[in-house]
Length: 323
Image (cartoon, rainbow, N blue to C red):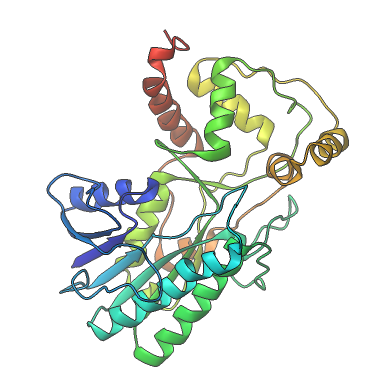
């Protein structure tokens, strides 16, 4: 089976390519510029991804596409029309790839979407499931949902097998964003006002996500399905900081601030969205993929945190934090 990976130079893409090669798969990558994620891997430069990208060379003799490339969500988007920019890459670019894949005889396309298609928050006791009505609330999530809908139409019209995987926050070696900022704060011993936070959030370790994507690329029962994936252990932001401290060997320094006060201060500072990611809940029920495909996370949450902390320690050893 020959697999084309798009977005191969990204956080997930590099790990995915390495794992596919380790398993002996034939891997082909499409990248925007000539920087292969791994030495001696078959590569095609496709340039910018939108509704006009030419994919024919990259799709030659390909059986399965795992589509990671996307315009990703950022906290501060300075685009004049963010939705238009997200749609150009995430919806139009994905639909264009899918149509060309079908025309070139590709059997299956695995699309990495986002749990943000389901919505921004859950309660601690009612996690998102696959059958929930989609509720995308920002430009990124809307573009991902529209891409999913476009893929379903193309699958119906062409017979291309489409598998959609919605993931929550992905962490692991190379992680960026709020996760690495929290890890860095714990590593530096920065006092954090999280002791009162009792929310629940689902995460997925990079190795678990990659394993799920590989199963979705090959399992016959996955065709036409949408799956939610996670590590299987929900965790509060306060407990996450404590577990990070254990992994780093530097106990987290947490102090109590009432949740209402945290929310109020974040509004005053224009950081409400960021604060909600810390104090709000977002839980995912990953049972369906386990029942349907027999997939289970290979790594526990603590194993994933330890691998991430070990990487962070190596990256920042020269700073003196871990000397």
